[in-house]
Length: 355
Image 1 (cartoon, helix red, strand yellow):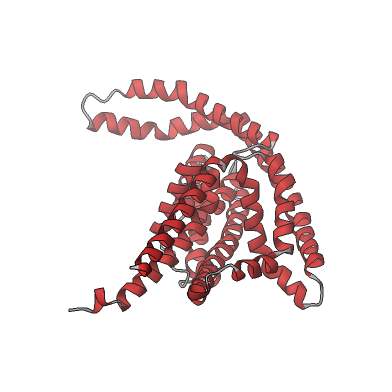
Image 2 (tube, rainbow, N blue to C red; image 1 turned 120 degrees about the vertical axis):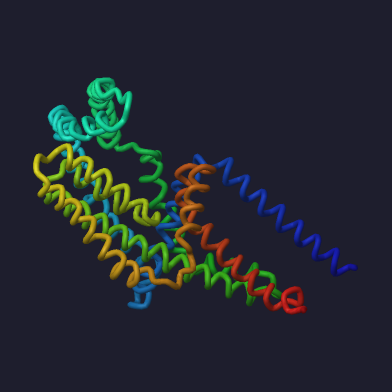
């Protein structure tokens, strides 16, 4: 009986602690983003700091060196990318009326065909609706996007990210080993070995997926951006970059980028040659991702099913917004490891083995 009471109290304690933790994240979701971003950056950069430490540098110097190298590469690259994308949007908006007219001319045979095949099909009403609304939607969307890029504000408070995130990343990176030692000292002795084993499995899953998938996203984003840019596609840099950026969501990045690129190409170009080049860029990108990038950089051992990832991202985005998108994959990895551990224990229990 005492053992049962102790187990019940432990269960109640950990359940209450978990509920309070989740409630705290929900309440503070608007201010947690730079801190979560700093922790994620620290986790991604820790192997590089560890390499510098093996070379004889202390952890503080190694942390400063890694962050400095990242900043001098990332910030100029982002500024250049924003400038190029902003220029492309401006050119696209200036040529938008011509593209709309070209697009309407190209779909005219489709509308005529539908009018012949479908009774009571009001082709004139559809033409009038498209002429009156399509241009306004395109210009409004492009103007808003150009304004967001020019101002440097999109989805997040950029000032807090730029000011707080590097500081958080620095302190987490510098004290990473001390944090792990402190956490290790707080583990319950009876379950310490099992908890550490699960933590190592979570780390392998996150390292394999996040670091590997981040590399895949960067490579694909660069490939799509340059490929679409050299085909002459307006907004090619923006579409390619976004398609690569969201390629960590299975199938969504490539399909959405392909559809938008082909639609813009059909409106922009008068011949099918450039359109086929755009299609070829995505075909080659998907071939490289499926046969080389994902198998080599991510692998099949991470244990995160594509459907589970999509569900986690959707749930995280609905519950916590952009913060939810940032923590969705780590949370999914933790839950996945715990579920596999629970299934393993179940298969070793009498409940499963009894006939």
